[in-house]
Image 1 (cartoon, one colour):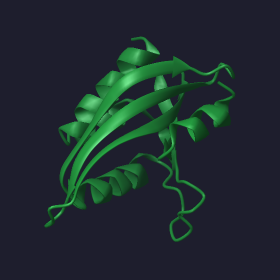
Image 2 (image 1 turned 120 degrees about the vertical axis):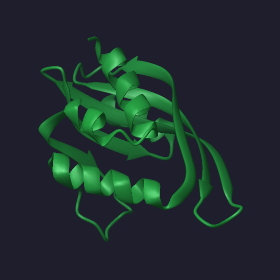
Image 3 (image 1 turned 90 degrees about the vertical axis):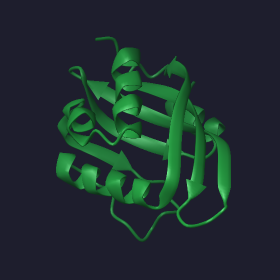
Amino acid sequence: MSETDLLRTFYESFSHGDWEATLELCDPMVEVRLPPNVVSQISPRGRESVEKYLRGWLETWDEYHPIPEHFIDASDGEHVVVFVRVHARGKGSRFAMDEEVADVFAVRDGRISELRLYMEREKALALVGS
């Protein structure tokens, strides 16, 4: 499976809450690197911790649909930047969001080993030198 296919499958299974399929795509020691401004939480590491984090994230939304739009192989040769459009609505509110964000993945040995989340696409590209 190509890296792009792997990441498309990740978004698909994540969007449907298929945790078994989502985590099967990840290295056992996968890590979610949180943005520097999120200081109240330690970055989740390992499938169990990452699943707990992702489930908690989805539970804050009545609707959450990440749609990968563009995949960019980073110039560092180790990462893939994914431009994502997120359609979401906050739990119990009328607040709706339609945002363009970016995720940065490290893929090693055919599995996701790291995920970084960015609200600004330019910061994601700057991280990996693209």
